Image (cartoon, rainbow, N blue to C red; front, side, top):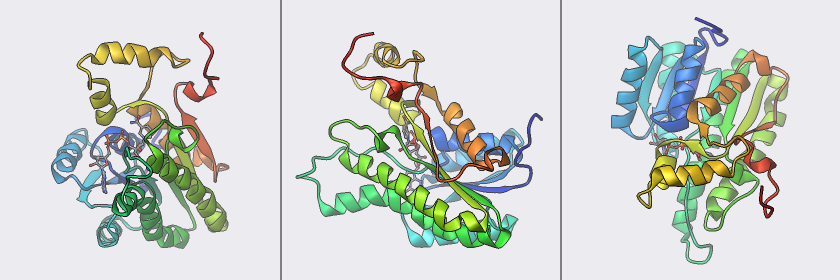
Length: 262
Ligand SMILES: NC(=O)c1ccc[n+]([C@@H]2O[C@H](COP(=O)([O-])OP(=O)(O)OC[C@H]3O[C@@H](n4cnc5c(N)ncnc54)[C@H](O)[C@@H]3O)[C@@H](O)[C@H]2O)c1
């Protein structure tokens, strides 16, 4: 097998049952890592875990809602018991939220930030003692292009994903001396179930995708696997000199100055 850059390393991926998270589980395992796939959706997680095991990949599904402290603690304890402390953590669980800033309730804010920001800190808190104990570790936070530029109606998501960049930098400073690197990936439009559902919302998914593709310098949106390859790079020793950084994977969308035609 080509690469095996992560031979035997223990990785935890949150929100791993589908989309970018599932692609991260697959690509990390293809590089030789032992991967714990955490997801709150047991049915999808078990099916995804089985499908990857059938490809002879070392992937273990663990049901966990990563917004719940007790679930996070239990999942990391199971990983440690089975394989030892995690050396790689991919904070991927997250999702879009659409709210009006005035009508949104405090409980909805807490839920949006809990999923898109606090969960990353909870998992980092669980992983860091093991990483510092080993004197090595890599955390990759899956943020979003919405950390830098956003759309109307998505304010708690944009706030949380920008917060995740701050968390990335802060943890990089705190834990660099202990040998732990912390970086962020900022995907743009990426083909995953929620994006496919969005493309199909008016019953013309192909037409919608052509329209969306046309605004991207590369003429297309990204595939989940392409984002996962950036995650693998940041998790690997190939990125040994990189910490506190943000890598955009958006098929060129954010390089474009809006307002002018082609
Ligand atoms: N798809 C895109 O275009 C895109 C763009 C930018 C950023 N992102 C980010 O990438 C990440 C993955 O996005 P995706 O499109 O693959 O999402 P997705 O909805 O396809 O998958 C998310 C997974 O996370 C799981 N999950 C949700 N809440 C959870 C929780 N509390 N605990 C555990 N698991 C939970 C879901 O069950 C699901 O399996 C998210 O953080 C998202 O914000 C996606």
